Image (cartoon, rainbow, N blue to C red):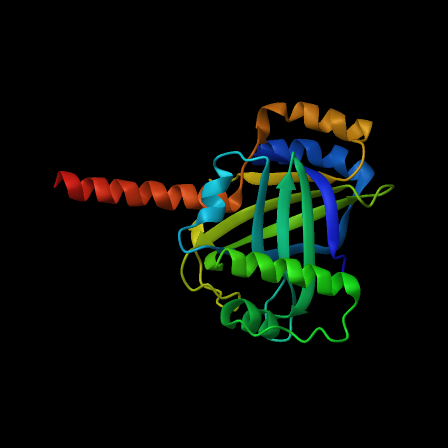
Amino acid sequence: MAQEIFERVEKKYLLDTADYLNILPELIRFMRADAYGKYTVSNIYFDSPDYSLIRSSFEKPVYKEKLRLRCYGEPGEEKTVFVEIKKKYAGVVFKRRIDMKLKDARRYLYCGFKPDLDNAGFVRKQIFREIDYMKNRNSLQPAVMIAYDRIAFIGKENPDLRVTFDNNIRCRDYDLDLRDKTGGRQLLNSGQILMEVKLNGSMPLWMGHILEKLSDCRTSFSKYGEFYRIIQTEKERKEGGKICA
């Protein structure tokens, strides 16, 4: 059964190709690629009609949350996907998710038909209640699709230590269906790579040395937040142009 509950600290770094190639040999001394190799991660983020969730995150609150539908690999009707809440409180990330087939997840998230959980365990039912409450409380609806290509590594001695590298990050606020393979706006410049370090314990000394070399690359980059910032800036420019015309 897939892991349902996560609690960890995440650190993000925006690298160029040279940075990536420089740290990779040292990284693979202590880590190995996960079982999936290179794969695509596709997400639909949900928000209120006035984008209250993402707008709130720009205010740097102590607590913030997101709801998303996530697929690893090729999406299809019978594909197992994840409906998940991602919360962040005082710098710690909490993620709670349930898995279901894409067709069932879409029926619930887009049309309001709740899945059959009669035979589900206590934890699964509790997580769904949290998801359902958040969805209805905020009148959440599909807002943005974000997909990217990922390579992930896990610690050889500590599998809870995880490092991911994302590139080809593309986003769109139309055709919000995981089955639609149309493109979107590129979020990073050519050659840029988003590195995320995820751990739920103390930082190994060797990882600390690697991150020290990347201190100038540290970022608070949010894929959804950056896309929202871009489209809002463009909207303001267009509206400003109309006013001045």
